Image: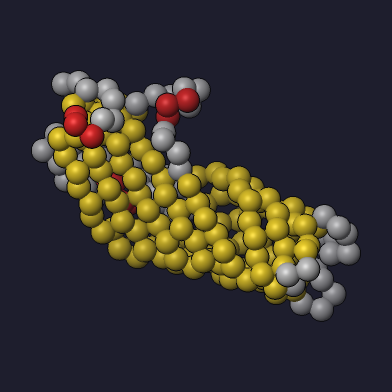
Length: 180
C-alpha cells in the first residue's frame, strides 16, 4: 500500500472533521480557568492498493476533554490563552475498498467497520478568544496526541494487510463555549 497522494496534493483526504461544544469557567481575576468540552473527531485516510484498487478509511473518536487554561490578558476584548486538555473517549474505524482509483458506489468491493475501544490523550492548545454575552467564541491551534490510526489498524481485509498506522496531529479550529 502507498498513500493516495502527498501533502501538496489536494486529494490527500476527503476531509477530516472535528466538532467541539463545551462549557468554560474563569476563576476570580480572570487569569486561570477551566474548560469541559464534548468532542467528535473524524480522520480520513486514502491509500492505493496493488492491482488497481483504492482504500479509504476513517477513524472516529468521540468523548470529553477537560483541562485548565491560563489567560495572559483577561481584560482585553481579544484574549490569548494556553490550555492543556486531557481527553478520554471511544474510537471506531471504517474501511472501504474500491476497484479502480475512484470512489464510486458501483466500484465498492468491501465495506468494513470495527470498534477500537476507549483511549486517553492530551492536547496542548493556544487560543484567541472573543468574549460574548453568553460565553465565548474563538480560534485555536494545537497538537492532539490521540492515535488516529487506532480505528483502521484493527480492520481486516481480503485485499490488504493490516495497516500499521499511528498518528497524533496538529490542528486549527473554531470553538464556541458557554459560560464566562
